Amino acid sequence: MATDVNPFESLQEQIDDAAAHMDVGDDVLARFKRPERVLETTLSVTLDDGSLGTFEAYRSQFNGDRGPYKGGIRYHPNVTRDEVKALSGWMAYKSAVVNIPYGGGKGGIALDPKEYSLTELERITRSYAAELRPLVGPDTDIPAPDVNTGQREMNWIKGTYETLENTTAPGIVTGKAIESGGSEGRLEATGRSVMLTAREAFSYLGTDLADATVAVQGYGNAGSIAARLLEAEGASVVAVSDSSGAVYDENGLDAGAVREYKTETGSVTGYGGVEERSNDDLLTADVDLLIPAALENAIDADLAEDVEADVIVEAANGPLTPDADDVLTDRDVYVLPDVLANAGGVTVSYFEWVQNRQRFYWSEEQVNDELETVIANAFADLTSAFEDQDLPNFRMAAYVVALRRVIDAYEQGGNWP
Ligand code: GLU
Image (cartoon, rainbow, N blue to C red; front, side, top):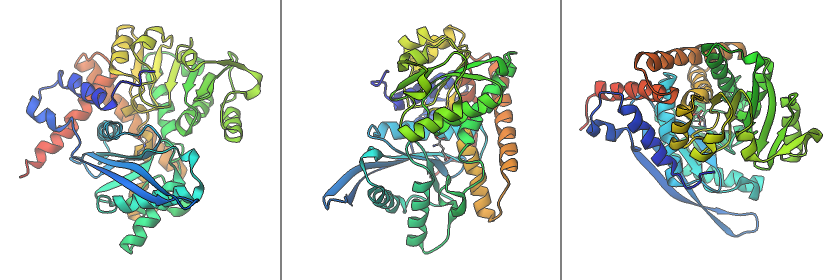
């Protein structure tokens, strides 16, 4: 794993590469390569044993030209300022790829949630929410779940914000539980867009998803739901992994049963007496479709040389280094980028926010239908750019489409001051 690759530099390289295919000056481009502002703060929280815990926490507001900053909050020991900046940029371009009226933001706290009790996590989350309060709001910056956060944390953030503001404002965060103003379909949305993107890609390439074998790296929310939905499309999920290792069955695993096993035991390894492999073996498995669904930099240039999959659909944010992208482009491996493939999460966040503002709620069927339309339209925009401008790969196509939308919004607004 290429852990030394700085994700913020990867983001900037992706933007530069796309801009080389566009008519945009370096002076204007500079604005779209850096966040507008970053909050870096230290949370001080009393722990259960009475000692004081201090935690590095961030919120990066990358770009707000197309709407409120939007993006998740990550709890992970490796959270850094540069990682959060990169993730916030990917959010800005993701919202533009799927054409929803948001900018990009991201937050994070450097901690391993497994090391803290429920009450400690609640106090840490409320402390973070209080720090965020001057920056966020349903019209300014709208957090959501990301790695190791979910409905529970979003409900706490909403509660803290509403108490401090003496109001009700369900649209302050998305990814809430249904009873707290969440949307049907939001929990599954990231995995669903991975499946929808794979379906569009296989049909575009003239191959049948129902005959495909699939490997999934990372078996959290996005990876496990994508696996289950791909299985429902007829594909065979032959390998899945998490940080403990990989399990493999050439006859196909039962994606839902592996998820239940992981929920009970904490990991996928040990499941059902099937073959176990290393994480690198999973990434280079001889499958039709590979889904990296864990963290950044999972595949570097060296590993990319050994990838056997024909198609990669990125469920994680930034799982390929830019050098890996070059290798895979040269090797004619089709990569469907994160900013399209995992955009279901933010898209259904947008639907949740619309429902919160209208205080009128949709059925799961309506949510899923609207999501399908958004992903199909975005895929069509991306393939048009790919073909019309003869771009090297789908990531470049996504960035060309997205950058154009963000830059147009900025230029139409005029310069200030
Ligand atoms: N954290 C998710 C992502 O990376 C969802 C963000 C959101 O719903 O705002 O896209």
